[in-house]
Image 1 (cartoon, rainbow, N blue to C red):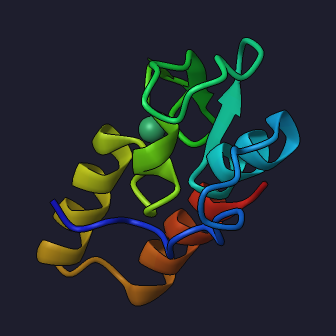
Image 2 (tube, rainbow, N blue to C red; image 1 turned 30 degrees about the horizontal axis):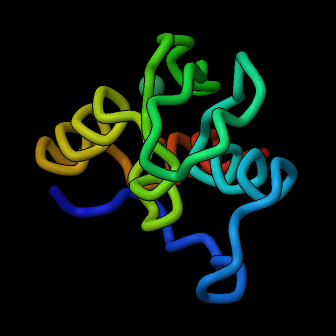
Length: 99
Ligand SMILES: [Zn+2]
């Protein structure tokens, strides 16, 4: 599946994510964390999608590669495929990328 967002700049290789960096990476792909950073990039982290409101349990290492809410990504692809107006599509993307 193609990432929906640009990759989030990662911390120095070999250095762990701080809780602040981790939360910023999640917000970058449209999630609002609902619990503190679990401490591991490969751990499930309960977040809410700020675009569709769904509760999701993404992992940080996917989010840092630009992977956001799958439901919203699928909806965005569907909108692109049926060629709605470019403006509507860009509004969706802008909304999804807002911090
Ligand atoms: Zn969503």
